[in-house]
Image 1 (cartoon, one colour):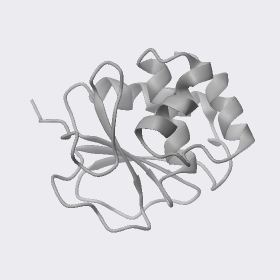
Image 2 (tube, rainbow, N blue to C red):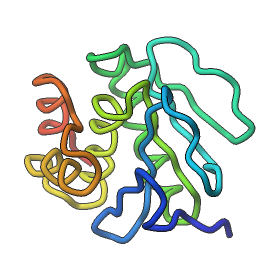
Image 3 (cartoon, rainbow, N blue to C red):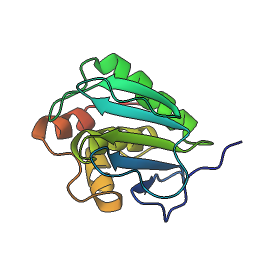
Image 4 (cartoon, one colour):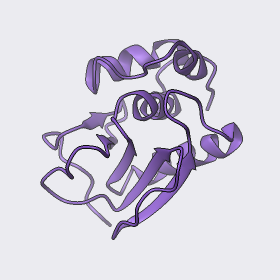
Length: 143
């Protein structure tokens, strides 16, 4: 079994179940500490290669995932793996798309959809989930 993140690691969100997931902006340097074991990159174009297992979810900046059914599958896989692995969700800035994806993981973890954005803003980044349509996407996200 692989160890998960520490709560002191930068950008780590503790979900209500105790699972830990790191959010990150790819325009910033990789934080010190252990690398992710699995990452989901939320970008409009293919991400650069990384030495850990990663998945690309096509998601243009300030928009919504290009394939919402695929996004649901990717979020479910990330949530499942977060029980035993170091999972990272990342976009360019680490706030809009990353915050939206983290809020969806919070819903999968039991946070009511209408409170998930507030949860992520309180526990990850107060500016997370940047657009009205990203907020609406989370409100309508269901496990």
